[in-house]
Image 1 (tube, one colour):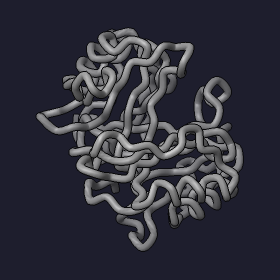
Image 2 (cartoon, rainbow, N blue to C red):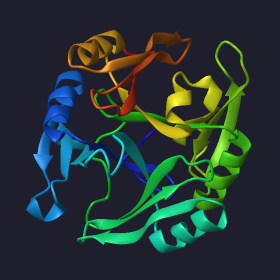
Image 3 (cartoon, rainbow, N blue to C red):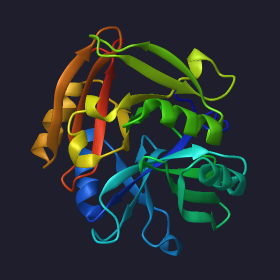
Length: 265
């Protein structure tokens, strides 16, 4: 499970690039109950989405021609420069070299060998998201990739991830779950699946899909539809796991909702 006790290789930040930050505030406020707080003029319009006073994501406005609307997942590193070298050495791409963000930390934007984008964060004063694994916050991630073995090898080499494999619900192969080195099954935070197993993957290609918790998956999808989002996969039950759905926000950034099996709507 995700936790704010961040260690090497664990997700510790997530942010949204959108062409319309005001519209995104309205959408995510209505769907997940978030409010937006500016990080200050020195950060070029970057801000934080918060829930009950705790930061659950970052957000920035970017022109559509500069970057497609998308969510980016960050993984913790204790040494951004060394991790950037490991990404390159294992066939990935460093899109933006490690850079300091004031005294808050050090970030790097990368892509894995299949082209799925991700980032790394070496904490400074900002240790990461303040809330995860609860309704309205990041609770899971899933990599869609054409070669699950190659992806497992890449991230294992770059971040030291370890894996647990279980049969896909309803058949159709194995579901690979990952966790930081030495953390075991209790530390699992993401899955790795073949691209062709993910609805709409032909349009998005290899990517990291972020799941946000909700106490009512159907209500979240209805709110998304009402506020201009597009439903990619209708709410679906996974036995023993919960109920999930995949949507795109009004500008095309894709995300998922997850209502855990222990949560009642």
